[in-house]
Length: 416
Ligand SMILES: Cc1cc2nc3c(=O)[nH]c(=O)nc-3n(C[C@H](O)[C@H](O)[C@H](O)COP(=O)(O)OP(=O)(O)OC[C@H]3O[C@@H](n4cnc5c(N)ncnc54)[C@H](O)[C@@H]3O)c2cc1C
Image (cartoon, protein in one colour):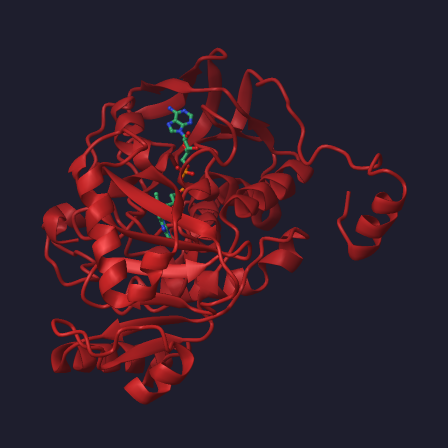
C-alpha cells in the first residue's frame, strides 16, 4: 500500500476500512541468508538497505520485544551533522543527506523537520573551538554559521544571556539540523523492509549465538534455533550481552540516559538549542511539549529508567539557561540504555568470528546515525568491505590506539 494525501482523504470518506497492516507477522523460518539481532532503528535500516541496495531479501530481523520498543522510540530526536574529526564528520554528513530524502524514499512521514540547531558558547575558548568546528563543517560541504549574541537575542529572546556564571557569548547554528519523529523512523524502515520480503519477527529473543570452529552458524531464540551464514549484532544498549553470547567481550558499557517532556505549550521554540556549559538540549515537539534531556546517569545499568539526582541536574541546567521553563509542568520522563564506547564513537565492523558482524557503540547520538548506519552496515554485510564513510569505526581501534575522540575527553567514560 502506498500512502498519499488522496488515500488519506478517500479513506476518511469511506470509514478508514481500506488500510492494511504496515508489515506482516511471519513465523521464523529454519534458515535465512542473514539474521539481524535487534529491531531498533539501526537493525531495521540495515535490513532495508540490504534488500534495497544489495538485493538480499532472505533476511530476518529478530526483535525480543516489539519494533520500536528500544532507544529508537526513546530518544530526544535530534538530527544533525556537526561532527568535527575525520571518521565521524563524513559519516554524519552522509547520514544527514539520507535523512533529507528519507520520507520520499520510504513513502512514510517521519516528520523530519530541519528547524536548525544552535550550540551555545560561553567563553572565548569555546568560541574559538566552535569557529574551528564550523569551518571544518563548511569545508566538508555542510552548513554552519556563527551567531552573535544580538542575532541570538532576536531568535531566542527567552534565553538568559547575562547569567552570572555562564553568560552566553554566541552560538554555532546548523540550519539543516533538526528533529524527526523517532518511532516513525522505525516504522518506515520496517514497512520498507517488509515490502521487500524481509521477515520482521517480534517477541523473538536471541538467547545464544552458534559458533563452530570460528564460524557463525546461526542463533538460538525463544522461538527455536535459526540457521544463517551471516549474523549481525545490532542490539544497542544490549550489545555487550549479545556479544557475550558469541564469547566476545566488547569495549562497550551500558548506561542509562533520561528524557523529559512538558505539557503542551503554544509554539515558543522553533529550533533545537544546546547549552554549551551543561549537557542540556531542548526542542519543542509538534504537539507542543518541550522535549529535553541531559547527560547519562553515570553508572552502568540495564534499567530503562533513571534516578532523581540526574533529574535535578537536568532541571537545574534548564532553569539556568532559560528561567521561563520553570513555568512549564513536566509530564513524563523515561530512560534508555546507552551503549557507551571509550571514545564516544561507534563500531561498524566484522568480528574475529567469520560471518558475525557488529554495529554498536552509538552512545547517546545514534538516532541521527540510523540511515547511514543501516547503509554502511548493509554494505559491509553484502560486500565484506567497510563502506568508505564508516571505515574508521573499527572494533580493534581501542587496541591499536586509533581512537575517534570527538569530544576530546580521552578514554574516560566519566567525562563524556
Ligand atoms: C533519552 C535518550 C535521548 C537520546 N537522544 C538522542 C538524540 O537527540 N539524537 C540522537 O542522535 N540520538 C539520541 N539518542 C541515542 C539513540 O536513541 C540511540 O543511539 C539509538 O536509537 C540506538 O540504536 P537503535 O535505534 O538500533 O537502538 P534500539 O532501538 O535500542 O534497538 C536495539 C534493539 O535490540 C533489541 N534486542 C536487544 N537484545 C536482544 C536480543 N537478545 N534478542 C533480540 N533483540 C534484542 C532491543 O529490544 C531493541 O529493540 C538518545 C537516547 C536516549 C535514551
